[in-house]
Amino acid sequence: MFSSLPTSAFATRQHCEALAETLEALGERDYAVAWTQRLVALRPGDAGVISRLLARVAQLGDAARLMDSVLWLLPQPLPAATLAPLRPPFPLRTLAALGART
Image (cartoon, rainbow, N blue to C red; front, side, top):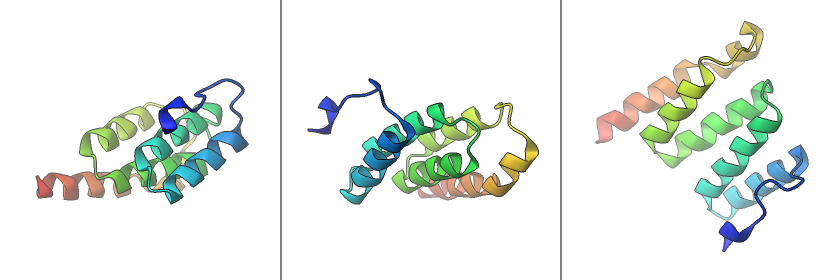
């Protein structure tokens, strides 16, 4: 049903954010993560958006997807002031917990 939604034609920050929030509320976490990834692409240096992406990916419980997000985040040319509030150990602790479950 949601796969037929437009993916990038004129998607603005407001559209991506609204879709991600709505899809998350409906329990469609995979699609919420996808729209949050698009939002990060539109606002690459926004710590709040990056934090939401990491939180949504962590909620999925998919270690591979979380690792992809962390590996994407690490080489980004972001100032330390942007990365510091993200608390990088958070995704790493989540990865460790997910690894313990498997």
